[in-house]
Length: 82
Image 1: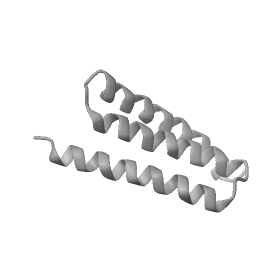
Image 2 (image 1 turned 45 degrees about the vertical axis):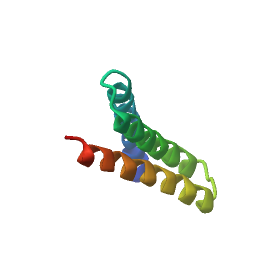
Image 3 (image 1 turned 120 degrees about the vertical axis):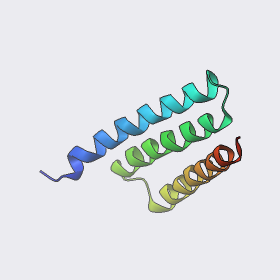
């Protein structure tokens, strides 16, 4: 049994949990970066799923770039917050 067959579903579950926590930070705590981190990790989970079903690499690369940009903007907002 390949290690990735065990780790990938666990990673996807953790990404979804982080996504939900980000939504909580965005909605309940009124933190915009919470929504951005939620988007990032939900997109990462989607990336993992789409990769497992054989979506083309170009599509995955675009999805990954969008997720990274959301994280970058979110981190900028965290650093800027006083």
